Structure formats: structure tokens, C-alpha cells
Length: 195
Image (cartoon, rainbow, N blue to C red; front, side):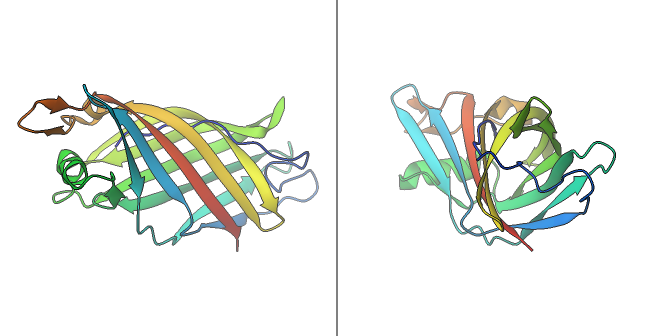
């Protein structure tokens, strides 16, 4: 899978809950209301695949440095490779085949120390490691968090990746007459609940 991250807007409150003098580790559950969308194009039209059946059992950790008062967010999200609906039975089947869902039933996205930008407190920067079809790739990422309440946040972003990054062939249908382009955009919407 190819993933992309970027964007999240917050109020005037700090993005993460760390402030100087109040340093603690906080755990956030990635709830079942979270979703991942894959947007791509074929030589004929565009397609849209949406994650379905995500259980919402993954945890993100927020750590902070007492010296600087800055926070970082990290954690891993695991989804079923076959858990995507492309709104077309043939495309859904071909997508699962392209990502080798039978051989590699899980796709993982590991956020590596997303940190606040001192000049833009509502934006996080860092790296994300995507493991797809047994291959792991690291991408830089920028994302934003919207604080929905004291105990809930919405982390969202976008990142472009290529099937070929993971040694995969883009899906094809109708005996190769319809071909999916190598580049796809991944939008993620993670609904976080404070534990």
C-alpha cells in the first residue's frame, strides 16, 4: 500500500497535551471510527478504496521532554490487507490480489516520533514506516491534529506512494485493458481516544 500524510487543523490549544512542568506519557486508542482511503487512477478513470472492518485496538503513545516542553507521538496501526472496499467487486478483488493479501494478510503503518514544529504548534512532522506485502518503506510525513475534546483528537494527513516502492505491480482488469497507475494517494483519518 502506499500511504500519504499531511494536514490537520487544531484550535488555539496545544496540539499534544505536554507543556513545561506537566510532563507525562499519555496513551491514545486509535478507535474503530478511524479510516484509511486509497485514491488512484486507471488509464480510464479514478478509483477510491476505503478501509472496512478496522477493529480499533491499536495504541498511540504521546511522550514529552520536560526540558523543552515538546511532545512526540508514536505508535503502530495494523489493518487487514483484504479489508478494503473499492466500490467495485472486480476492483476490490484485484486490489487484494495486487497487495498479496492471501500471502501477507496485514498492512502496518508505524508512526515514528511525530513531533510538533516550534513555529506551527498544530502540525506534526516525522516519519512513517509502511509495511506492505512483506516490504517496509520509510517516508517523511507532515500531519495535523484537531482537538475535538479533552479526551479525543482527530489525526489526519495524506501521503503519496507507489506500488513499485514495494515491488508490486498495480492491479489490472479486463485482461490488462484497464491499468492502474503506479502512484496512489493515501488519506488517513485517525480518531484518537485518551486512555
